[in-house]
Length: 103
Image (cartoon, rainbow, N blue to C red; front, side, top):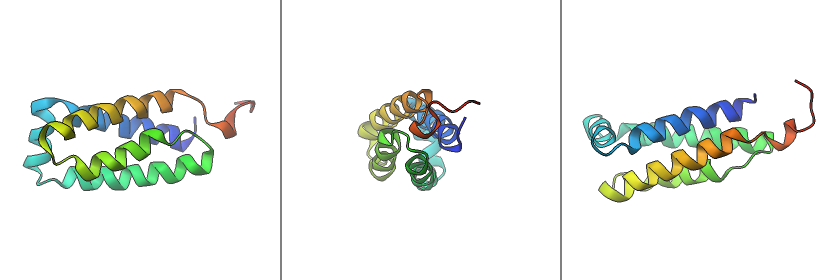
C-alpha cells in the first residue's frame, strides 16, 4: 500500500471524526480552530503524495476546501462528512502507478 493511500485513510478517518455534529464542533471550537489548520496541512501533504503516485486527488482537494470553510457551522459538518467519504473511496482504490505491479 502506498504512502498516499495510507494518508488518505488517516485524513479520511480524521474528517469522519470532525464530521460528527457535537463531537467535531467541540474538538474544533475547543482547540480554537487549530484542527482545521492541521487538516489543511495534512490534505496538502496527501495531495502531493497522491499526485506523485498517480492516484485520484478528489478527496484531498475537497479536504483542502473543507479546511478553509470548515468554520461555518452546518456547512463545515457536511463538508467534513463529504470529504471523509471521498477520501475513503479514493483510498480503497489502488493508485495508477501500482496497478499491475506484484506486491
